[in-house]
Amino acid sequence: MKYLLVVGDGMADLPIEALGGKTPLEYLNPKGFQIVGGGELGRLRSCPTQLPPGSDTAFLTLLGNDTPKVYTGRSPLEAAGMGVKLEEGQVCFRMNLAAIEEAGFPQGKMLSHNGGGIDGEEAYALAQYLTQQGRFAQLARDCGLTIYPTPTFRHAAVLPTRETGFTLAPPHDIVGQPVGEHMPQGACAGLLGELYRASFEALDQHPINKARREQGKLAANCAWFWGAGTACRLDNFQEKYGKKGLVISAVPLVKGIARLGGLDAPDYPWATGLLDTDYRRKAQTAVEALAGGYDFALVHLEAPDEMSHDGSLENKLEAMRRLNQRIVEPLLEQMPQVDDFRLMLMPDHYTLLSTRTHDGTPVPFAIYDSRRPGAPRPFTEAACADAPILENGDLLMRKLFQLEA
Image (cartoon, rainbow, N blue to C red; front, side, top):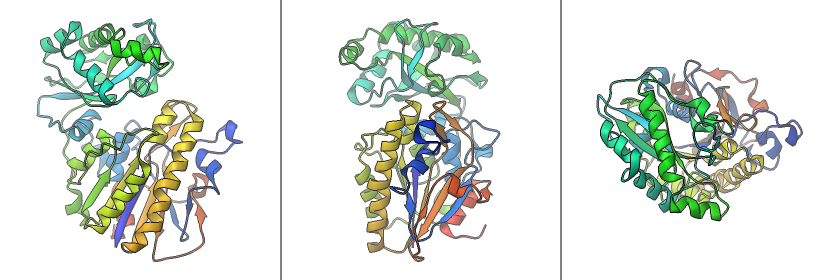
């Protein structure tokens, strides 16, 4: 028996006027997201009420962890996905390359949490440049801040301090708002605020950003710190559930949670975390892994969440269509050649187009079991509305694996 968990990040939403009062999942039915074989529907409280809703708390829950107990902040999870081991007496931050208006601080508005979708060599070069020249580099040296660049808009930063009282605004929550209204508060607020300003000074007129503007793109001109946290320890997934697992994701956060739990989570250069990711290869990689000795595969698609943060209804719908047509349908077609299987489909959390932010509403899920053929059922928020809510991720995993609670 094989097991699959397919996660469309942030694809759950509220009814949208432009879709005739339907959610994106409802609008795509009956064209997509039909759960064949009858389908078992349910709901999960993926984001505990005492913690902010987001993929960090949600994926900890989805993989069976006691999230309120183990959660120490977002960035240590991402750092683990980047190969950064956090030690005691260190605090880790997520450092986004963001795009803000050329007016800069404090009146400039946040234009894009991901620097206009910057990635690859450009993203790596800008993050590397910050560490080498100018006031930002000097501030970093003076306080012992270490930056770990990646070829994405997501980077890790580690500061040697035992302070934990940080209040830092996630950049995807303040798009369209003046950045001066969301400067750091609490521990090290002055230092972090100076780093924000110094990064803008270094990056706004960098040749890469000048070229991006000439191409009609946003300039990735600010290093924005958020998600502070300390070292995190998780239970071993295979020891807990008896399943050898593989996680297929472009996102360091998800890979970090997987690796801290003893799951395999390779780096795939063809997985971008954006609309242009290689959907079919994700599905094929899962099939090959399950045929080759793995018991469990998690396939994660970040694109619906990114498109929601961008405020693009059209692109969110397209990401979800591709998830259905290029991941879910191929898995349903190919897995019978491997073994009997159970496939769970779900978002990790709601991401609302109306606010461009996450929401902690319990998420819908559906389970298809290849041993129980039946008539297709639609998978939508409304279809799952009357289902009982699972209050923790351990119950979710035990339901997927058909283990006693």
